[in-house]
Amino acid sequence: MELTIVDNYQEMSERAAALVVAAVETKPAAVLGLATGSTPEGMYARLVKLSREGKVDFSRVTTFNLDEYAGLAPEHEQSYFYYMHHHLFNLINIGPEQINMPGCDLENVEQFCLEYDQRIAAAGGIDLQVLGIGGNGHIGFNEPGNQLRVSTHLVDLTEDTILANSRFFKAVEEVPRQAVTMGLGSIMLAGKIVLLASGKAKAEAIARTVCGLVTTEVPASFLQLHRDVTIIADREAAALIS
Ligand code: F6R
Image 1 (cartoon, rainbow, N blue to C red):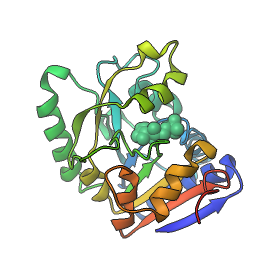
Image 2 (cartoon, protein in one colour):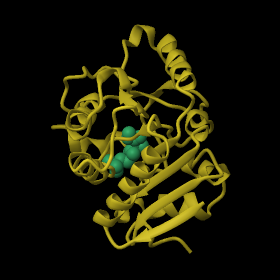
Image 3 (cartoon, rainbow, N blue to C red):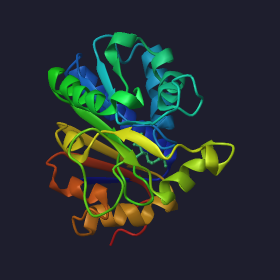
């Protein structure tokens, strides 16, 4: 694991965007795995700026998002479909046929999950996977527990996650209780992984990810087993690493 500690959120965002740009420069038809949430917003803003300046070209890129709330319509302002279009896809040169989101009809969720992993494989696998991390150590929506799933699946969100994400909704009752997420195996198959963390709410999870035991209680700790992971954490998020 390579750990880069930066001063603040802005620097984290710029470093992360630079890694994405480098991946697309190296391979113009790169396959990117993308995350949502507060953490990567600054990275997306930077990528939009660089794209407008002609410094990165997304015209041949394919994207796969990590997760989506179950049961939220794409046009819902808190859906990850909406988030990604609002922060990135509508603002760069990428077409709908290049974008893959794990939002689906819940009646056919198992078939959808199977096909999502098949689509990733058919695209040649993910070259660069961007991750955030939950305060509880989740990546994607792979929540802490006794076991972890390998492939894309429907998951029950933990109370921690529902509470943490209620900041985006009018009331905690409005937060969906389930999501579709890539599994740990799908994430670990990425060629390169970059995990972003900012703020003291992430400090314990980052410390356990970097120097704790590999355990299903901290899903991100499995990243210790991947050969090309870069963690970009600001000082607050890195504060408990010993
Ligand atoms: C989002 C995702 C989640 C978030 C995590 C942190 O696509 O996969 O794992 O990265 O919940 O969220 P923020 O960045 O809002 O603190």
